[in-house]
Image 1 (tube, rainbow, N blue to C red):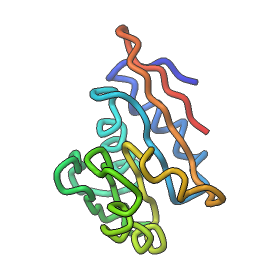
Image 2: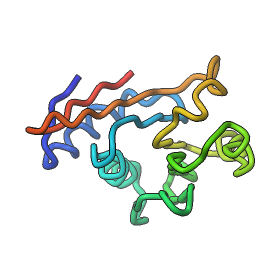
Image 3: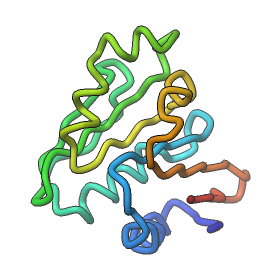
Image 4: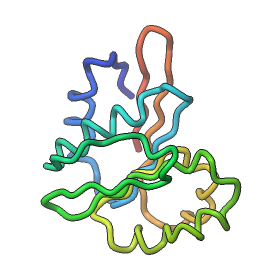
Length: 133
């Protein structure tokens, strides 16, 4: 657990990066919690020069890194597992160096038994509380 302000995202990223053992990272938190902001710091730390933006409308963004492709999903607008499968998420998961999935709840049951990390960001009003496993 970390309590962070917006200026501490770099520190949080530096602490979490060595703990990333799996290529799937679920990001949970309410609107405006900082999921995309964290992703921006993370992809930079992974060596990408691409600009990370919210994939709210595109559903998935791709970033290049020295380790391979990073895919950044936002499943907020998808209604069920079928819609998630229709975007070909399994193919992305199979070939990605890292898949970052915002609003993963609609797809979580499909990830049971698949190794992944989960990060929850809670807006406390004075900062953010970050839980990582």
